[in-house]
Image (cartoon, rainbow, N blue to C red; front, top):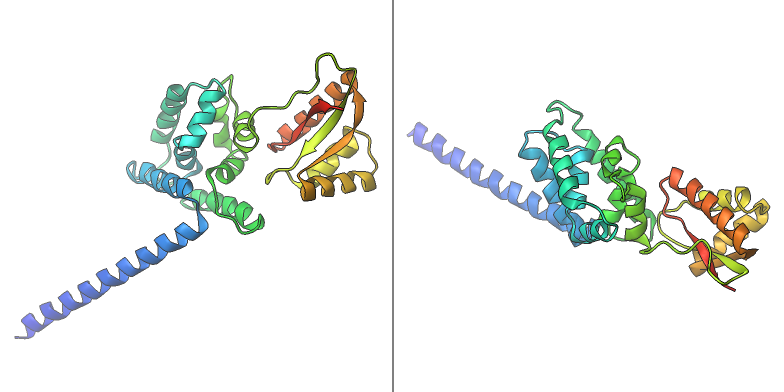
Length: 252
């Protein structure tokens, strides 16, 4: 009788724990739906599967693999002329070599940092692009350097689309224009305006705020030669920081 009672109590406990786990999973899924957009939810599931199927802790490499499988990211890779099959093979090979005893917090920290980007920007949902921004700051980003694509070119395509011209044919002078995005730090914009265009700190800060508040601002009217030189330099400064700075020439 005691044995039967013990089994009965165990069954009740198991059922209670199962319901508790189910409630926790439902709660977690609701939280994910609030924090991540639909594509990022799919990418997170794929990253976790890639890690679990290899008995590995979730790492930035698994996350990068999942991000490149996203439909929008894959389309951007193809638009830039990238070899998706070659990139996938390289990622699969790299994942097979991930250490089984690696730091399980690496992937989580990266995703947490990407979530911070989204929350700092009007509390919007986290996207695959947010995650790519953080991935470009890790060593695994080197695997994206497969000419004609690069990690920075991929990020720019996802954020802005086509790269604007640095000069215009048949024009003697052009307007050099800056446009806003969610990922280029304000301090970097000010730095570019000061160092590449020779603006004083007050004017640089004013233009930065104008870009942030209005979406765009004209830096100035320059000769096409001067504009090309300064725009090229500004882009290189931004590239070193993995920032998708939109700066280009427009007709006056």
